[in-house]
Amino acid sequence: MTTHLTPRRERWLLLTLASIQFTSVLDFMIMMPLGPQLTQLFDISAGQFGFLVSAYTFAAGLSGLLAATYIDRFDRKRMMLTLYPLFGIAALACSLAPTYGWLMTARVASGFFGGVLMALSQTIVAEVIPFERRGRAMGVVMTSFSVATVAGVPLALFLASSFNWHAPFLAIALMVSVFVLGALKTLPSLKGHVQAPSDDGTAPSILSNLRLVLVDPNHLRAYAMSSSMVFAGFAVIPYITLYLQANAGFQAEQIPYVYLCGGVCTLISARFIGHWSDRAGKAYAFRRLAILMPLPLLAMTLSADLPMAGVLVVSSILFVVMSGRMIPGMALIGASADPRRRGSFMTLNSAVQSLAMGLAALVGGQILGRDGNGHLTHYWMAALLGGGASLLSYVLANKLRLHGAAQS
Image (cartoon, rainbow, N blue to C red):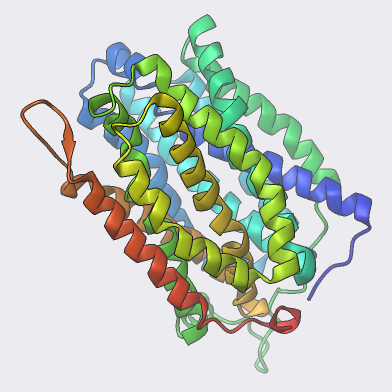
């Protein structure tokens, strides 16, 4: 059931959801470039720092599994206005952390509360924005990733260098306190999904609701498509920095240009891809981008002999195609959910994506090796694996059944 908003209210809603996504994405991304400061300050190994980074992802996956048992029992606005402030408190706890153990606990809390925000935002878009405009709407919300890459991370690093590593997390907590006021005004009350009591006067049990989500064959196909879509990129993306420094001779100070150029290109392209997917059809747009994905993946892993400008072109194309698939892809996945259980479905989908992300990075890391000169080897094999996953998502997209107006 779609809630109709005025065009002005709809724009403010999408801006609010994009702002919420910006803070959660920035909170996750900023940990990686802060590695040198944190390992020195807390006197921890690279492996311990790896646990610090992955704590967010694993906590996000766990929270998604748990949230799927209760999210469809509450108003979407109420859920967002509960979880988002708690996420802000977790960011504040990160900014105050005096020890490694404190910071680890705070990162788990950030992932636990932040991991549900993306699924909840996508659920709200699916329930408020008509399917024929949903590609553009998803494009607006997902520009938060590009803005976090282009502006958020450099600004956070500037704060860290000018003050200390606590400052970026304090800034995130302050932004959350501002954006939650915007959410209070712009989020509509969404209760149409709340399930009515059964004939005996009782609400469906938690396990019964979860079982209904998981036994739906269309939901399972959507989860398979979603996980293969995410797996495709994360078999390669986490190791770009290592590859460029070890094989292409990039200096540490040159790496930000890769993400800056890629972020600017995705920021520009997201709007066009959203409009294109609305005009041409979400399934058509997704299939074209999914079948294109293996080419820039493989090109990235074979780009060591290119000049810096060539590497930036290849990496930017990869970022555009990788992020571009998510716009029609998430619109299709949201439309494949049973409207009565869309919140549970999307929250489980977020958990599935988190697990697929971690699995892809783990498998990709196992494929890689080093030669006697310290160069990464077999990186192209990770690209082939990711390309195969993208082609699998192409096949699965053809098998999805879309609900309601999305079928047209």
